[in-house]
Picture 1 (cartoon, one colour):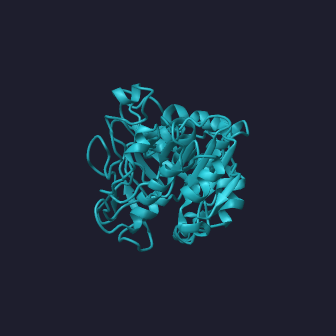
Picture 2: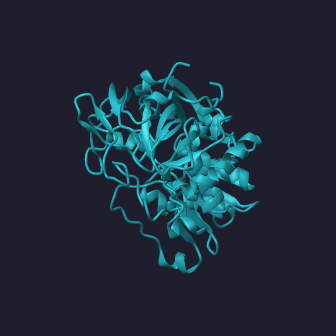
Picture 3: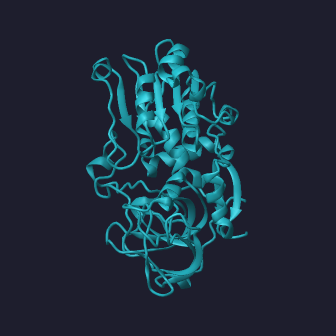
Length: 391
């Protein structure tokens, strides 16, 4: 699909509800239902966006299958997307109608102590994504019978139009192809940022990545850009090695082939002469966090956790390892501040440094959105881009 132009959208819809199609998740694990919904106009500090394309992330899959809290239905999933501003509410000055934007689950109000600090990418004003609009606690979606449809991660991109708070909106260069730009809304930014911002991977260092889904491969890409000398992928699917080579993987470990199934003692430490400088957990399993931590080097080794296990899960690590200088930390959205760091990644893509095209393995029409779920469940895709129109 060609890059978007900055053509202005019709203004007659401004300030009025829009009737459009959305893929609604009504019951856990059941196919999404494409139906017509009503999207209310934006309130102050809000932006209504026409979605150009969106992609499916494992977080969408996890919440789609979830039966207990924080699961909530009916809901419009999707949080990795790109679109064009249709209209804005009062007190919105960053964007205007026709601007190309990326919505992100990560907020950046620009006013709180966290947003003003270089030490964190969290936002104290809007600390977590919401099922509603964050400033008002209400939804902008209803079905044609008037039933409220819940938001997802403050984005909800599986719809032709959505409403997002300006704190979750980043204006971008419209020349970048939409199918590549939408990946920076979550997955690729998270992985690349974890290596670049959170870990600050040094040139010539060794990196070990546990889990080679799209996030893990994005970590590899980030480590490659940082100049890591050796990037070791750990996964039970050997096919991931060939895929990972595109993103800088130099070595591969299949835990099933390790004696006693101890990746840390039997393989990584031997390969790296004592442990990797940086380890990344990209699956969301506490046992894997502990294994990754065991694999990092004493003295300066750093383990970064990107995956999230079920609520209430706790990590246990040896206190001696902590005393000996090993670090365990987490990374949300790769430690990136969306409104400034996404632009950096876009420029690196335009300069042919950052790889994005290689992450897109499938492209489908909105009507086929349930096929994207099947592909991800079967492990047949990295990112499946879903086009809202056939243009």
